[in-house]
Amino acid sequence: MRAIIDEVHEGIPLSEENALILYEEAPLHQLLQAAHTYRLKINPNSEVTYLVDRNINYTNVCTINCQFCSFYRPPGHEENYTQEINEISNRVSELEQIGGSRILMQGGVNPSLGLDYYLDLLKQLREKHPSIDLDCFSPIEIEGIAEVTSRSTLEVLKALQQAGMHGLPGGGAEMLVDGVRMDISPKKGHPDNWLRVMEEAQSLGLITSATNVFGFGESLEDRIEHMRRIRELQASSLENYRIGFTSFIAWPVQLETNTYGKRNKGRNRIELGAGATEYLRHIAIARLYLHNIPHIQASWPTMGLDVAQMALLAGADDIGSTMMEENVVSASGTDKTQSTEDELQKAIIRAGFKPRKRNSRYELIKTTVIEDSSLPCKIPLQ
Image 1: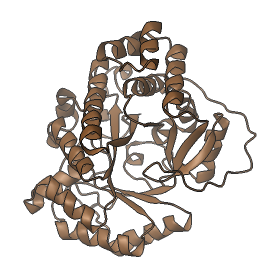
Image 2 (image 1 turned 180 degrees about the horizontal axis):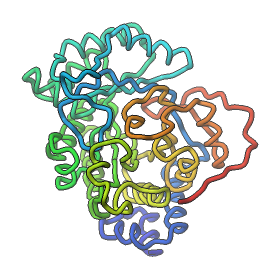
Image 3 (image 1 turned 90 degrees about the vertical axis):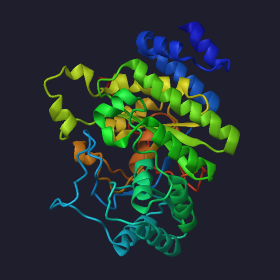
Image 4 (image 1 turned 90 degrees about the horizontal axis):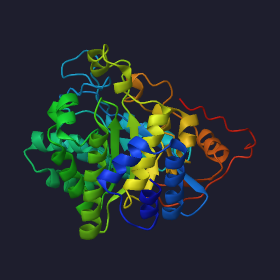
């Protein structure tokens, strides 16, 4: 294991076989230390970044029926909603008032919305809120818009970009392994679809991130296969377009209130979801394996701020965003899916780092650091 870790530090990309050895066998302290050391090689400073933003879930109407999603409602359901443009603009104004710089806008695959809805929305938001980055519509939503409008996904992306879209969220990747994907979200289709839309977005210069939801009972080989596909696309996009994924964000599936959790209620809980220790192992492996991804983000909405602090010592260099409003993860049973800038700063400081505010491009922006930073750090491991 020491030899494998030394090779990574020497610049030799971690192979799938060696990644599996570390994932399965490396002592936790050794693995986290190795990932943190490698993080300092890629981002050699004592800073941890964060983003002040707002999640806006503009519609909950969706035809994809992902087994682990508690947020969506099928067309015709009495709880359906689609927000008007003025309603969304008011939410963006609230973000501006607290010094935010980005909205992350996602919803469902809503067959009643044509391209004009999305173009008008983006144009008005860009006109009314020129300082706010618009990261909107995950790859599966882009596919849905393309299907409704009989256009290619590349044509849709070009039209949305021209209307003011700045980037594409990484949602909808879950596991880029066909067997797992067909079990949890068969209507999303083959993993190649997600990868293709992301490559198209990168070819246009749009900002993108890569995500990973794990804990569906998949194998460790499946988890590494997901990372392999992300790493290969990153290498190709950096070579061809000089732009790729800004970051990698992973979190365990939330099982409390969704169909997938109920369907597997009788299974061994060790096989499903993930506790703090397994999450930290996953983050550490991601940092060591994804050598060409510049940033690894800690997921406090699913794991809590205490575990996110520990992830900052396990390879992560970013603690994510305030979110301000979040409906998808919270619908699956997570208690806390919003945080203040002060809370994120305190978590970063107590983990031993300096907080720095960023925008969606990971450019550092003016940061006013809180005064009270003296409380001790308490990080329980499960």
